[in-house]
Length: 207
Image (cartoon, rainbow, N blue to C red):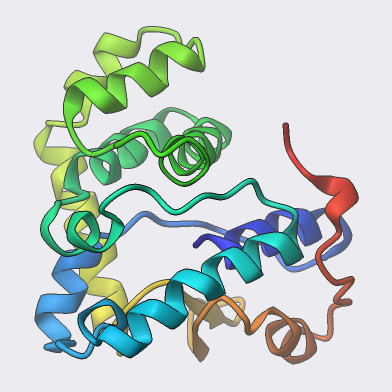
């Protein structure tokens, strides 16, 4: 659930703090941190998590339905293709990356359609009328994009990341002051930054 992303993008207009989003490879983080205790691997946590996802989506005003065979897909399907496409999109335009990330999420969590393969991601690009979409898909396979995704992932791991969502709060020189895990920590993040927290701001929902 990108509740953190949703909350931050809605608050961005009223915050002075600059925000930068970086795609990283979730499976790589999990493997490196030996995070075998993922909630989906524990039946009682899995059951609760499914309910909590809907509960959180209702709070943020996000369309949501649990995709079919969700647990198996999340535990066995790689997200490296969409993550590389997001990196390639960010190299072209940051707003494009954010738009595609939101659209990929909606495809999977609002409509129950998979978004893991090249063909599936290409459908998202066509739906969003992305210019030169074929070039973007080709760029996602470049050494540059693969290196950036690896660097983003290594950066997260280097600061103790073990899951997602994950945030670094840095000073003006790039020094990490605080790391934050979880989709429910935006009030604490706002307080740390001395920025206002205005709740779900559902009036800011992106169509």
